Image (cartoon, rainbow, N blue to C red; front, side, top):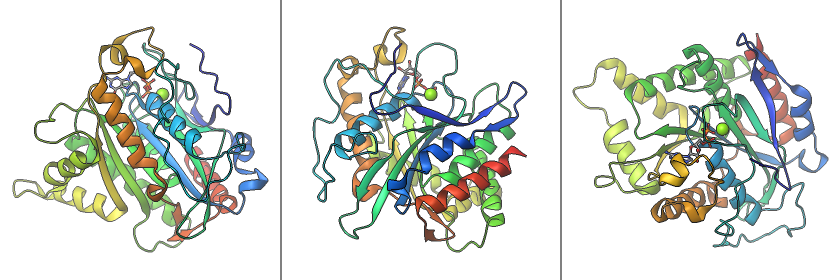
Length: 335
Ligand code: GDP
Ligand code: MG
């Protein structure tokens, strides 16, 4: 399938060798982060992470549609810089437009291993504060799948957490207890490495959003961010008297590590999206409910007031500074 996008492509900054060693490509990272126009801008990095074939790249490609419809970018500057954000309700594009961007596919082969960053960077000026920001998109693979070991997985998750300001954890059907414990393990790992790089005040990480696909329990919790928030508070975070002490501490830990935690529930997308080998991503083939919720959830995540700035040691840093940290983090994981 042709995924060629007119304005950008996924750039691999970290992969695994056949014997699972981490390979980092610093030159590619430099190319994206060194663009003169963005050096002093504050940073938003959206990272989507989760198991293979969870519909991550597919979701991100719709995020790209949202971003290209609303923000200028380095490779698509023609759009005048909008000082006042105006929502475009047609951002999902034409009904039969094939989906392009991060490659995604049906079938058993992995398309993304490690960390890919979108080569183009979106530009925005925050209305309220006048801060100029650069928005980066990251696609990460290596969590909860069969042939990665827990260590590989938590390393990748930890790295995603260190690098991003919005970490979206893509899960199927529900949040499981072992995934929460795993999240704690990976976050501790990330915290440990963040500490090695400096002081730590306040909560170390910014936004964590659980994105639950193929949600079935919609009689109890409606689709979208509201049902998700309710589900998360009532069923996942709530400390029940029946919980063992270690399960309580997982919940406390997660709450204390992120400034903001959200959860969004998406319905099953329909047979064409979930099963058809020849499906090209067009929205005319999605179940109507899925299409509406997909739109809603992406708007919820990416509307300008939702864009969380990257902080390191409680400071909002600029692109040139964040780059140095990312390179340090990558180096740590290489050894
Ligand atoms: P990734 O490996 O997580 O990046 O997954 P992909 O984005 O490559 O998608 C894998 C397959 O899942 C494709 O056939 C998609 O059409 C399909 N898919 C996309 N979204 C969903 C979803 O919400 N639910 C289900 N069941 N399948 C999906
Ligand atoms: Mg993928």
